Length: 222
Figure 1 (spheres, rainbow, N blue to C red):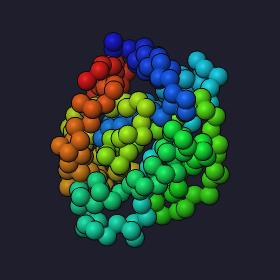
Figure 2 (tube, rainbow, N blue to C red):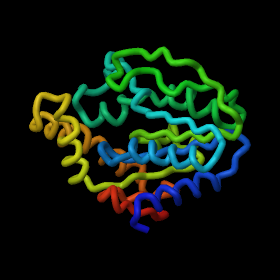
Figure 3 (cartoon, helix red, strand yellow):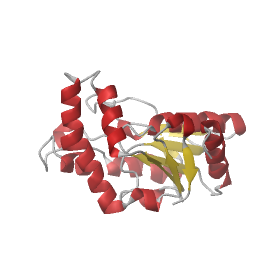
């Protein structure tokens, strides 16, 4: 299957096929600049069109640890990125577990802005039992989180594509394209290679989206 609209419809089929007595928690996983957020937004739109169930969107970049708490590794190291960037305890306890078995359905969709420097004052929401959570982010299949997903989608691109897209995107907020390239080569890509080596997320996911060419994305099972 190589038509993006068809891929989105088939992803929606797979989400709606999952039956749970609690909200269905879908994780859209992948490396930086793989296209996770765009795919998750589009999937949520398709689901809203096809079902009357509540669709919750959460970007896990809003669950980053405050920078002052990232002290175990050098701040620009791949280890700091992989082990310290995200508040996995908060992701689990404030979002995923409340929507899971025995949860009270009270959740928050984020704690900080994407820079992790501003605390968000969003409401605590209550989800209906048949809600659908579509969450995107990096490292979603880490051991701390993996058991809390009901469906795992991995968005695959090559690291050459990560580098190319990442430079094009992040040079807008960094000093220059060269600074963005340095950040990807020394921090993001090595940190994501550590995740892949440790977890093998593409193999463990339930569904695999090849997003090298977003207009002609393909869907498969690992």
